[in-house]
Image (tube, rainbow, N blue to C red; front, side, top):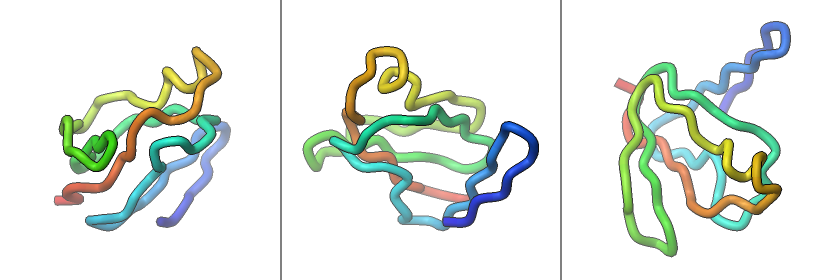
Length: 77
């Protein structure tokens, strides 16, 4: 994972298979997928797939809760 800051925005470049955050982590940021796919995993079971343009992670900020799932890079192509 590599972070590139630009003003108040930070781009995170990730490779296939990397995990952005894990279930139970403290949530302090929301994210938007610019390119690629993210796999959503809850209790070890794949429950969804997110695509370019989708925003996620905001519920941990709004509700002041820990992350409710793992988000893994599925594809950067």
